[in-house]
Image (cartoon, rainbow, N blue to C red; front, side, top):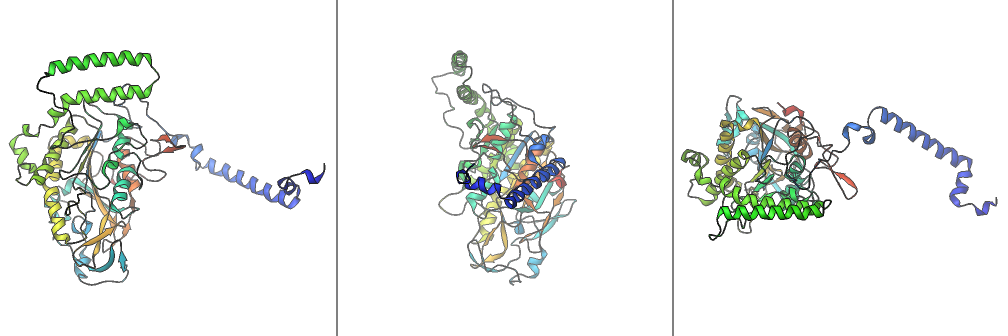
Length: 494
């Protein structure tokens, strides 16, 4: 053979030195793969971690389904506080802040998210020991403080962003970007719901409006649209549910029965059309909601002592609105809704209406706490009294924390993604317990760092779902809520 007719790559293989070099590399790689496979360190060789996609009947996408293993929680309530709650003014007690108040110790950066930094500032509210556990909680949230023995705190939370829209996205969807399914959508996709007359996932927005990242917080992303959250609250129910006065309930029921019959006959002609089946199921759920939503949202039917306990009788419309939302959340969970997410704070153009306190934190945080604290504590206490915490996991969270030092303006605290606090309560978690810690300033995590991926992995675990196996094939990848990250926080499990 004429050497001139051989390609450059072919001539390179005929070179003895190149041949031995490439052969040695290939054989070494094969040996490494063999060793990794023996130790079960290759994803493809670990059959226990193959993806699990729930078996869903398109004609009934909301039917209840089994998880991957027995669940400690059957439902989840998420109380989300947009704007970033200051951990050092609420749940993370740091005596060093009082000791070094007005000073700037070494190690504090000159500039943070919104500009130059000021000096260390002690908490604006006094901390006191609460409950039998003696947990130090501030006077900013005294009603939640009374529940200290029922709460499981995580003081070592960290996140990957310090911007609010991306922070909300990341906490609720596992991604900084838009277009990814929310946590509630993942759970609805995996487990369906017990009550076929209500959505699997309900998002209850603040009476003042939606959070910064809007519907991304309850969207379905690339999951089927059936699993997106239904957005309404006690004062703004889903549109077009009320029957015209000229139509009776009996007439409406007969009409729906006829439509159901016609839809089923039409579907028989296209048995493989899953989109058609899902669309019919969605319309049928909307029809059933016409009957179920007015009943479950009838807050005025609650006993007077419940209205007063939650503070739903307040003359302040925002306070009473949020309190009524809390009662609605309990009623939805009682009816079997799988996931309820309750927002305390909104993104509105006029003034501060969430926990984002870059100026006058004493005023703005107090305003938010006056709305959130009493009703949220009443909700947890009421659910405990009714025995609901045996089956419901309660999650209280915010996208990141705030700095232990002030901004240059001397009245506000900047964003802090390096250490913040969230808590859980109810089914499957320890009571009166604290996991991890931040440093003496509450600036950075000191022990047991916990990522948002870990937080979400733990929620899925408590719902009977393996976060490494719950997946959906999209865009060439097996997509997960926790992407390729996350570990269950075993330390907090009861």
